[in-house]
Image (cartoon, rainbow, N blue to C red; front, top):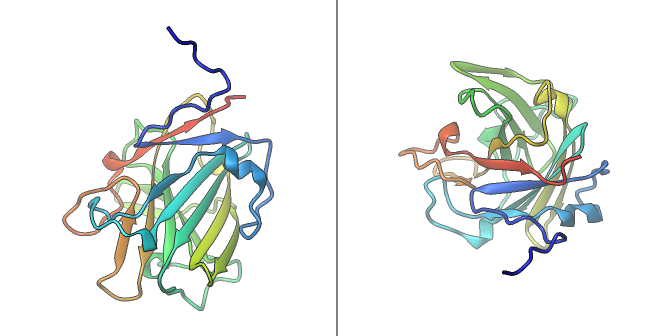
Length: 222
């Protein structure tokens, strides 16, 4: 019987994303910190029904964590960009999903299926964060930090987020397995592109299907 390599990275399942532990990281979407390479990315380019894969719209997501923050990095291939020109002074924008965005839905407590957090970031750095619960939503006011860059030559935009753990869960347990999903929206008018890591498979585009979420696991528990 072969011996397992203790230095090997944990196997990542197709419906699982693994967050790598860091003491902290400075956000710089244009010049990502070397530590991002310690997190194995998930990659998707199919629509919300799991069909019509398109490499020109491929999205990769990496996750890092510390005791204080959850860090996300999106790398998004695009054909055209459609963004709002106006936002609150701090960059927050209502209905941000009506233009191009990358989205993360995070559910620290999987026993409360209809309760989760929604984070969106646009190619020009606008953002929104929401607390989702049965029957509605509210501003989360998470205190997230972000860095965004657009590489027009490569047609890739990238975003890094630092989300305070205290805005996600009152008692963070790194041994717990969270539920999560990641999405992209592209376009200004219908028909728009709705891409998903874990397909929701609804007849019409709908990302709010927590039963379809994948798993988020925290590696390197400290």
